[in-house]
Figure 1: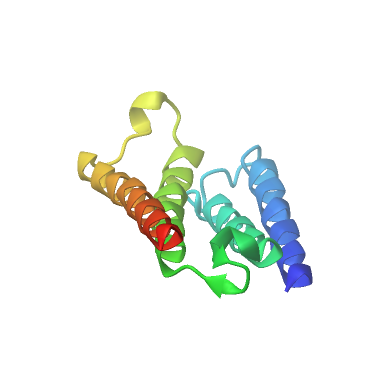
Figure 2: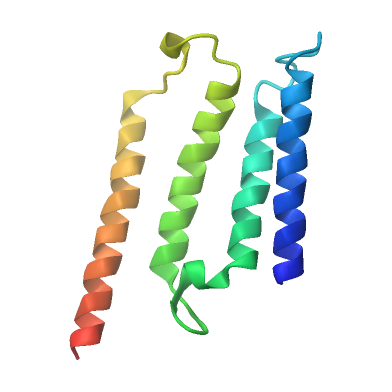
Length: 123
């Protein structure tokens, strides 16, 4: 699994390099930020495969809450990478204000996870 993780990370880095090079050509903006967003997705999934302890509650046991929080944050970051890649100014780098609820959900989920893990450790 670590080899697959490395390959996904390398593919993501190559995607970022490709997107950066393409942004200096006449094809700039053609993908509307999809290539860098997909590249970032590959990097995040690669990190999960290369470092499986990131999502483990204890060695060998995956934490469902960590997976859910990771997925919510991944969606949030992917959308911002896609929007921000072609933004010409900071004013263009906006998203609907209701998206802050997703960030609140992610951090609230992380707080719940930490509280639940502390309760289990006390037993």
